[in-house]
Amino acid sequence: MTIRTALKHVALGATILIMLYPVIWMVVSSLRPGDEIFREPGLLITDLEIENYTLGWNALGHPFSHYLMNSALVVLGAIVGNLVSCSMAAYAFARLEFIGKKFWFAIMLMTIMLPIHVLIVPQYVMFSEVGWVNTFLPLVVPKLLATDAFFVFLMVQFIRGIPRELDEAARIDGCGRARIFLRVILPLMVPALATTAIFTFIWTWNDFFSQLIYLTDPEMYTVPIALRSFVDATSSTSWGSLFAMSVVSLAPVFLAFLVGQRFLIKGIATTGGK
Amino acid sequence: MSAISELSTLSKTRAEPARRENLAAYLFLAPWLVGLVLITVGPMLASLYLAFTDYNLLEAPTWIGVENFTRMFADERLHNSLRVTFIYVLVSVPLQLALALLLAVVLDRGLRGMAFYRSVFYLPSLLGSSVAIAILWRQVFGGEGLINHVLGWLGVAGRSWIADPESALWTLVTLNVWTFGAPMVIFLAGLRQIPRMYYEAAAVDGAGPLRRFANITMPLLTPIIFFNLVLQIIHAFQAFTQAFVVSGGTGGPSDSTMFYTLYLYERGFGKFDMGYASAMAWVLLVIIAVFTAGNFVASKYWVHYDD
Image (cartoon, rainbow over all chains, first blue to last red; front, side, top):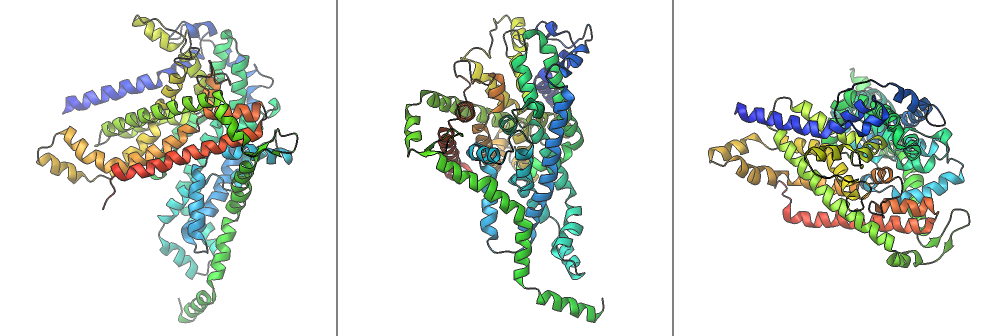
């Protein structure tokens, strides 16, 4: 039995190595002279080359920090929007009785499955009419309106697990619904809020399609769009700096994963996220 | 609490009509309702209208009836994009789920370090949709990429997998399979729900590990398999970023990675043929709906729910 377990660990270790080797190799290669990227499949660094990072940082019209800052702004807006609007809707669905509840709940679940492509053309027309193209508003305002219904669903599931006696006790003490939401439910649903914040962070940080459509002015580029334009401008000799900036762009996602893996795993295990 | 104060709260709760709760609920729902109307349903209806128009964003849309849809029948590139997308969905999703299930079963049953493995296997699901990983894929499967180095040691002649129309799509299939971690986590959660005693009873009856897998794990896991299948198919139909970045925004070489979504983007935002793009979007919605409904119908024959 111990041999079987040992074999399992060897097989799992090998799988991990094969799976993550390209990513590790990219990190290593970003520290090598550019031409070595195409010659050296191993992981040993003979001469360390930090220059890739300084070159990549300044390779585009703005220093890379500019794009990082733009991405951070979009992400921050999206997180705040999702936390506020989704938790409000979730509280109504999980705890309050109202006319049409089942109908609205069914609609909400359906919107989770809706492909963004069906909406993107008229949304683009609408946002360009109000002059929001090349601003972050088309990326942030929908989040303030709870359009990421996945998180509404996640929070509804979570609130349903909070004992109703707590609401009742607060009500008997004279709390209205707003106070119950703020004082009782919100503090107890911090894990669901954390899951939402981390998923929103990662998905918005990686999001490409809508940022590609709404941000065409290099001044407004976020990290994915900047990286994309970097690819188009890259000859084979600057792969080192391209890799370096790719690593920079992945680092926040990796950090979020390290900090929040507990919430992420729980979040998808209970709701079945992407 | 004194009787008087209890009475007063009682009367307060009694005096509060359901109407107030109704109002409160709609206040809490207000942002979501506004979003539903302005960001979701409104644009949906608008795109349904635009699907029957000729619209280039500069001039007002002109009604052309079903012409966009009839044009689709003659559009070879659209047919090709459908073919590419179907291959991608129908190959990558089963492979991805099979791998997810295999590793979930291996990780189940109290293996030491399970939480560590689970996290590491999940990581590609978080990274996979990024531009950076698409850039990496371009190098790894390129002419002088990592894959060809490995093949070189094995004595196999390499080629540029990205630049060859025969193989370019398969690099994207590989990328989707690589992100098997998310369905794996869902499988693991499902496996935990299976009572241990079933396995113990089967072992007492002399069933080996394969029989236990076939007769206990698989039937009891079918609702989760079904759930993952529906979700991943919907997800795969909407794939965009990876094909876009790996092909340099062209869907090439020779349209071999031209996903439906890429072609939609090209028509809508490259050529500003917004009417046609809207019609395409609705066709995509119908395709996804048909697949999902088909899945639900088929599920009656193979998914076991607890009685």
